[in-house]
Amino acid sequence: MLNDKSMKNIFKNLAKTILLLFFVSIGYMGCGDDELTSGPPVVDTTAINYNNLIINERTSPFDSAFSSVDLYHGTIVQEQSTFKDAVLVDSGGASTVFYFRSGDLSLLDMPLGFQTNFKTIFEYPNITQAQFDTLTVIPDSDTTLTPSDFTLDQTSSFGDPLSSHPVFGFYLAGRYPTYSSNQVYGMIYLDSAWRDNGVYKLKFDVKINKNGENRFLKNSNITD
Image (tube, rainbow, N blue to C red; front, side):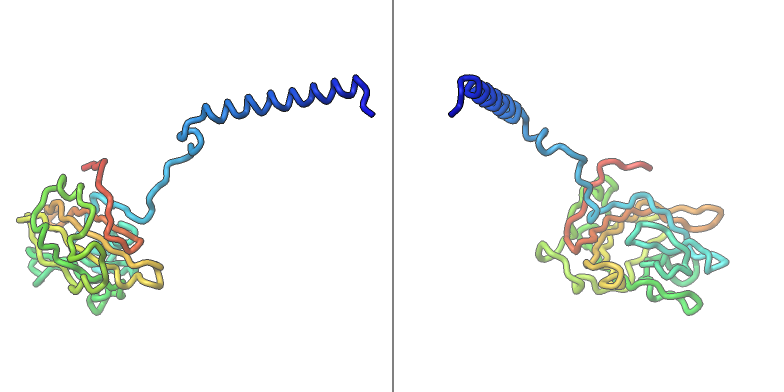
């Protein structure tokens, strides 16, 4: 049978427990949703923008010319690279008219790169940089993209100076499924072209989605 001293200790401990639970509940109720879910912001790694890429026309020595682009990683590469997705081609060899061609259609003296299929986006034949920055989809008959939407092995041609600023759609056919578990789609925007010691240079932007979605990011912070 419990004596008076034991009973007092039991009631004292019970009171402490009740008081502790009360303060814990008050503290929890005072926390906002932002405090309960705080943490680093989520970074979208599937929809990515590559801005201000500068590519050169093919010059001698041809194998070391930076006339190709790895669209998946947004980097300009040498034409001898097997990781090129597209090559800047001089149409007719007169250095006046150019176009992008699929990376697997390199000249006989160059290693093959990845196959890329293109799409002419008739809705955007000539738009401003600001307009391209806001684009979030490739216009299509429905909301999704499929490989069959991209049927060309090269883009339409362009010159120096650029007479227009078109947008081309692309599908990185050669990347799937070996190098990417998802189909990869994107857009190329032609920004400007000029000559540097007689060599044709082209600046362009790329928007890409590595998750097979017709969803692209707006550009919120552009640097020239």
